[in-house]
Every structure is written in structure tokens, then in C-alpha cells.
Length: 205
Image (cartoon, rainbow, N blue to C red; front, side, top):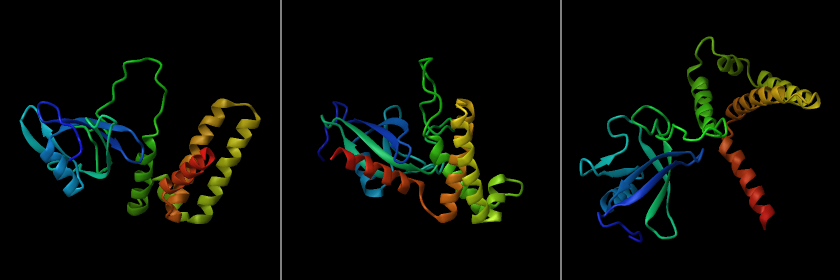
């Protein structure tokens, strides 16, 4: 195995959401847990306090499907990209990293995107009574398209009026309705992001 374990036979593993790129947790692996991670395609770690292997989600159900495992240039640390089935932290939060040590941290996070996508998907399945998303799916594509158009127009009006606050709120409405439209069309938002990524990389060439 082409990685470098430390004197205790461990290697640091940074677990990252493959879609939002949010860091979920940092844990340790030994050779056995890394091998089991590769074999099962789910994360396994080594507990230094209990001195035993543990399978993420074995009791909670919050497993992590492995998308990729990469080493750093020194091969003594790993970044493991996963698709999580639930919160990564035992406290019930998406990530173990929730407290900020600086006051000028940028508000908001792209981590809301996969969360919102999942909520919209579940709304289409469950169709809970009284939910606005249910209303949109019930009315169908014409209504959804109309809302996307309306919200896009509101963004344009806000921009023309030089009203940054209006642009912010209307843009949020536009993004939400666009995600509903993508779900109705069964187009994965990450396929859209992949198009943007390829265009960006193409400009570099």
C-alpha cells in the first residue's frame, strides 16, 4: 500500500463531502481499516482511545459511501471524498467543524446546496400536505417554469434598481425554484456543476 503510516501505524484521514466539498470530519486509519474502506467502499477508521476498528454508521446508519481516496504529496495524509447517508458528527451536525474562531468568516456555505437538493427530492416522494414544494410538484412543469421565469425577472428588476438586498433575496428564490425544476426534469444539479467545471478547465487550456 503506497502510503506512509506514522510510528503508531496510523495515517490522518480528512473526510470530505464529494459534492459540497465541505470537510466532514478528521479521523485516523491503520492499514487494516484503510484496506476495509477500499474493499467495502464505506469508511472504516481506527479509534486511538478504544484501540479498535470502527465502521462509520454501523450503529447510527449514517454511513459514508467512498467516492475517492487521495494522498498528499508526502503520502502521509489522506483525503477521502464520500457521499454521506446522514450527519458525520455524533452531535447530529452535518460536519464536526461547526465553531468558528474568527469573526470575519464569510456567511453562508455551499453545504446548503446538497441539503436543499435532498429536501426537494424527498418532498417529491412524500408530497407532504401544506408544503410549498409539494404545491409546485402538484401543479406541474408549467407552474414551475412560470415561477423560475418570475424569479429571474425579479432578480433583473432588483439589479436594475441597484437594490443589493432585493437581488440577494430574489436570487435565493431563483436558485430554489431552479433546483425544483431540475428535480422535476430529473437533471442532477451536479451534472450542471460538472458542465461549469469543464467549461472552466477548457478556458485554461
